[in-house]
Length: 235
Image (cartoon, rainbow, N blue to C red; front, top):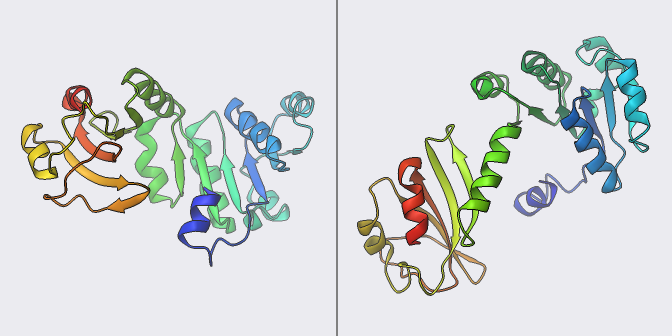
């Protein structure tokens, strides 16, 4: 995220992400803290249960562990959580997760990310202004989908709980795309398929109807879930 932000708006994100605060001691939050440590970072983690904090101390040697209620506004203010570059909320309870996220936003945190178990809470987190809501089960489903879709489907994103998919494919010599225009290809595919983007030799090309696909191109397409398998097998 930091690398992408620096490329898009370098004047805004010239500073590095140094201060990361994790609210909650869930297993996911623990894995994130461990990953941050492996990158040479020293996050802060607020855990309500003292025994859980003691267990985490044995494994997270570079993480500052604070034992307190992560949803206590006065505590968050004293610990300057609002000054953090990123606040990650990782509770086992989505309702507390929403509260913690809103408090972090209220404190003035630059970016807030939340681990969410139930997709039904999407709209609530969006309405609260949370920057990123991550669904571990959805992420796992997308990873499995990439693995099972064959070697040419390099990225797959599931949209609206499985209603549609966005996927990236590398155009091979056997693909029906080769030497055909966008218009010709879309005419042979189901109506729900839309070619969204095309990159060639590292350069982006707008997928206008007359552009011709070449071997080695990378194509991003959108399709409804009921035809995605058929589309990927043909691309």
